[in-house]
Image (cartoon, rainbow, N blue to C red; front, top):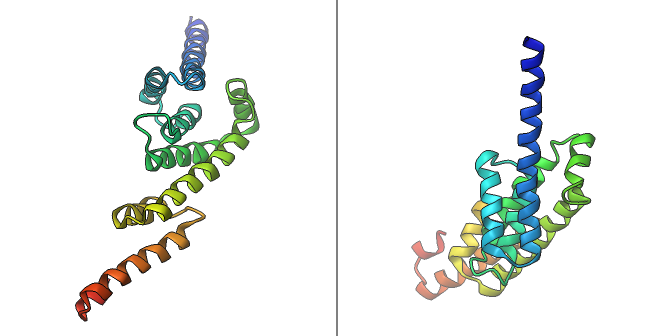
Length: 173
């Protein structure tokens, strides 16, 4: 009797696991068709079950980094891709092989997308030179490969603002 319950429990867990991967795969497929709202729903469903699910975080990063997506937000995309990166690095070979069934070569894709999103966000920050965005970048993206360059932009903006005011206090930024 106990053995039967044990096997049924394992079967149920496997079915739930497959269903959750299925949600992420649906999200990726919908994203490829630019069905943004449906992709978002699929990823949110998956993340409500497991906020660290690799494929769903990867999909959300891609979604929020798409320029065609009306709610495009590179900071949000950056946060999602960093979660996906952190979680994929925890996986062993068998787990990665299972994920590859849903998104081929997912580990390398995530590494690629970390760089893509980091570069897009950094480019936006450099072009806009908005002090609030620069400060947000420094707080949220401290592990960016472009971090030092953005800090220099912040320093330059703050120095130029201090020069305009031209008081001793204004140079204490």
